[in-house]
Length: 111
Length: 115
Image (cartoon, rainbow over all chains, first blue to last red; front, side, top):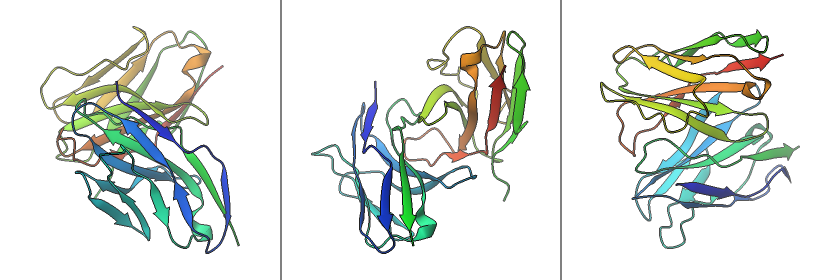
């Protein structure tokens, strides 16, 4: 079945620091790749996605590139803000349609 | 427009009781998913409905779990004879279709606590 390995947390950064959260996956077929975010006290929401190789998803200053050759979808942001503090989930969506979620990475950004 | 809604938002029950959780998907979305999120963990897939096709029940952890969906609208997840290990947040999601590129939109979840 599908699986995902996500960078262990928690991650603590200072405001304006560079962020990378690593994600590698195995999936059947040709998956779409998603990053979801869960802000404190809120529901899960889509952050960005990419549906084919070499596509770059981007939103709110976050980016991730679909790397088929390395089966990776690392999340990056050049300058994090306190408001980015949340739990981030990498999730491939393969031929089985349901998403396979990583364990999540807790990010805390300090002012 | 309205998002995915779930009810109740919280449910506390005693071990051995049955519970029913409800999900209202986004109007027009043909695909509906149920997931479970245990404390501090990622989401586990439970069941998937797509239109009038037979549901994919491959993620249901035991025969105490069942789900129904009426057409392309409301879904209910039923847990019979609840156990303490069933305590979790149960999340429902819907998507426009069942294509792998479709974004799944999540509801706020139902937090189930089994005493």
